[in-house]
Length: 264
Figure 1 (tube, helix red, strand yellow):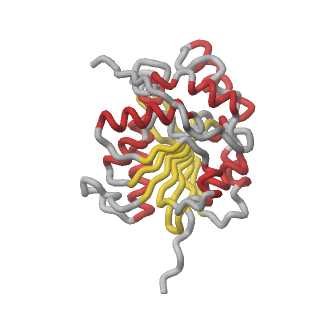
Figure 2 (cartoon, rainbow, N blue to C red):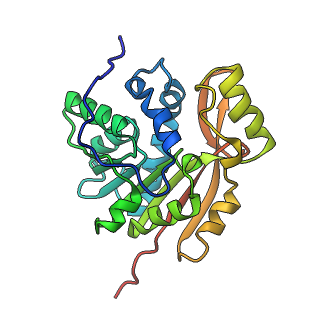
């Protein structure tokens, strides 16, 4: 099937603020029309998506006490995708029953995401804004917050992470995905991915902005949160498939939960 590319107007959307790096926003905005092209610039995310989706689903089922046998197990719950891009995670989450809000600092990304959701008939609340703005506007908290491959692109990762955590409802969970700052990630996640295999455009990542799992924990040490992981995300070069395992030297995920209130 030929990939559909959406071209839309972005006039009248909100401005970028706070921990957002304008250069990063411009980089992703320039290729926004390729979000839903499985063979385009975002092909690595399309290949990674099944593994990410399975991890998110199983974590949310466990944390929120929902029945995975149901068609829409998360009906009535709210989910926020921070840095949602073109909506690659928002749409499957909406199909699982979540009331989904997707935010991104790139007006172009949000326009593409809205156009695709309209084409597929999904009701998703897309906004060109930031986590910081949601807090300032008094946005109600969310049962699940997704923070997937975003933190390595912001200017103030600690403040950004704490703001995202403040948007998590009591009893809810944030799922974080990023890249480790190791020799292996420099060789594979940066040099090989950008300049040898050409999986992503050169300059997509700055290895110096990658974060070690202990740094994530340190940033949240005073927030009263329950942190698990890292859970490594590894590519099998023979099959081309991703899986969750013990090797967190390059890609990894963590779960960050806000404890539920004590029962009366």
